Image (tube, rainbow, N blue to C red; front, side, top):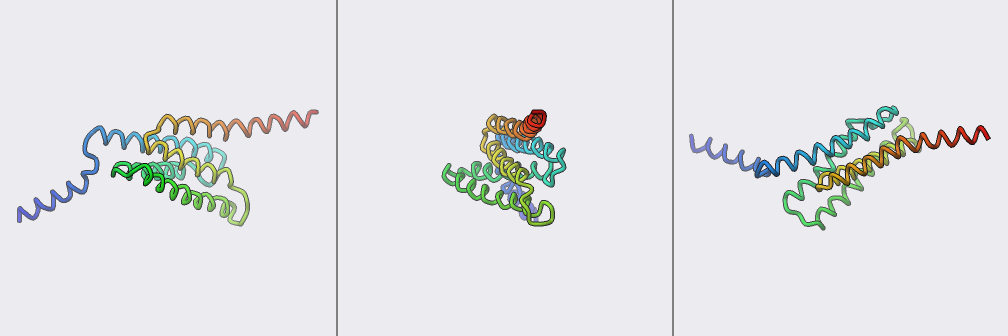
Length: 165
């Protein structure tokens, strides 16, 4: 009976052997946490504006996207294979965004376009973090936040100046 339990234990260990060392564990953890944090920043901005897709949605999209590219990369997939994974991810996230547009007000409408675009961008940021381009992911997040915060402010400012003229 001891041999059976030993075999079971060895099988369990082999199933959890995809992270071979501390360096790889740190790399995976960092990439997933960066994706989650950056997605959370974009989601926080959307949540502050009362939009349907908030912090948790954006975090999950970013972590999911990171995982979709990280796992094949870990398995030794070629760049061409990872590119195909990204193509499927881009299309799939497009459907998620379409849901934000169509069901945004429980009716067919064109509201929710910015939220849908934000979800799509969040997935791209997750991909960047997942493949190890954390600096690019951070830069893209800062640009997105600038667009989401500064552009509406600038449009309001221009509108107020036009009313005065």
